[in-house]
Length: 370
Picture 1: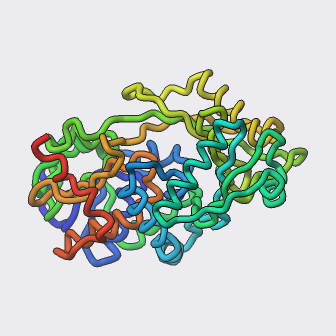
Picture 2 (picture 1 turned 135 degrees about the horizontal axis):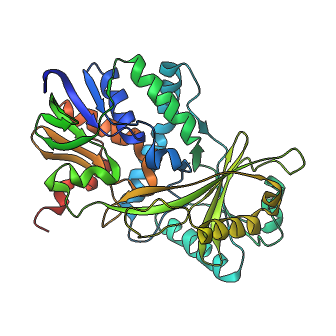
């Protein structure tokens, strides 16, 4: 069965990127259909929700830092408009980030991060263990210093996803709860139907390569396990800020939630595998308690794993694959962070305007001729 063309855009994928693109396009007046069997699920539902381009900066990934920083600047306006459209909170949490270290090697890593950021004209504030515990009293005695990054924020991922679903509905997005099988210019093979439209936007995360041959080899799944801990009345309250950092070389983060904290995340190159392992849970709990011992009194509310869509250079793919087909995928750990600027870029491209300059390095044509 073929559906007659009555949509300007079909967005394939209902994670944070697909929902953000669909909402922004519909708000701009486009007739939008979102194709996904279960929107607001998958990696987006499992995410920690960190909006932390500075704390995650790495030498050689300066374009990624610029992209994330530009999107972070858009987050307050994005959140305010999302909340107004949805009629409910956006999930944005504005209390900043602490990056802490436990042993001497961890502290050396933080020092290298501070020097790298300084070389780029970005500064963070070094804090002693006493200064860190003054702002977050639940930090444990093993924390021997760190960095304060007040501009790196976070969002409650599930609150944001609920708001995006409401905003899409409020702006007239049509939801098609079927799985897309293939994308061609102006059409999506979905279930037993073919959805016709003016332009297709592929935003299907790790499922994207199977939809279009131009994405072959450009997206791979990276597994990440995550825990959701609920505070009990007898335990110290969760931190107000995101607390993250290396613990004996392993990265761990604690992201506050109204009822507790999200702890993440492991990282495995293990193909399409969302099994939560005993070893992964053990490492996360061990490292999290090292940073904040009070977590041992929390309730283990949920364990889960998601598949991050990663590219060879860690930059996402944002741009035109061919006439009638755009792509917005491959955001790896940064889907929530980069959602505002990605949606803005997709809207600009569909309107024949220049996308934000920071998204230009993410153009998929950089891999042509590989």
